[in-house]
Length: 269
Image (tube, rainbow, N blue to C red; front, top):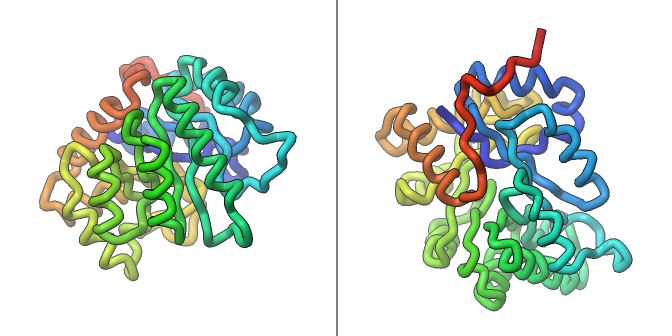
């Protein structure tokens, strides 16, 4: 049993073939998925898309790279209200990205703080994106007391020192297909060191397809390749990686209801 803890099923490349994507995931042993919200404009459409999939959970948030528009920024109360939907198990993705966004990024930090406040109101964990902003991200997390709600550092790609700081704040570390890339030696070292009870796996589909699927549109079924890589790195079996990352997922996202694989419908013809 596997869980894809971070994917974008409503994005081009997946949404056009969603029933088949869900069926291929099930065939690969991926029984639960978390579809991530990146803006409020498309949130209701994303939720409607998931109506037929009881094994797919959702999050609500505004991605740090979504351009700042004052009239469309949300306050913490509004985000928390959207998170009251029982299918929504987390706030995010949120965080800081100094790679894609440039200039004065104080608005990004304020948006991040708003999401942390919303997570506190909602009592649901955070999904954190950080790129070329590790120290600033940790600084905001500490200043806004993100440790009171916890969450996950998604698609982790930094050094052990950053992972250790996040772990010390009570956060989980999630590995994507990046850990399978030839150039990712330092990340593989991090993957060896993260404790069993703090590790998650994800695809970030449709992006970052793992080896041996590089060059293809990523999809939840491919999380199995990332799990296999972690099993080899950590000297554990694929079954054990699946078991512990699934248990970790439901420990972190405690409002998510585990669905029996027998109750997950087959959709593709």
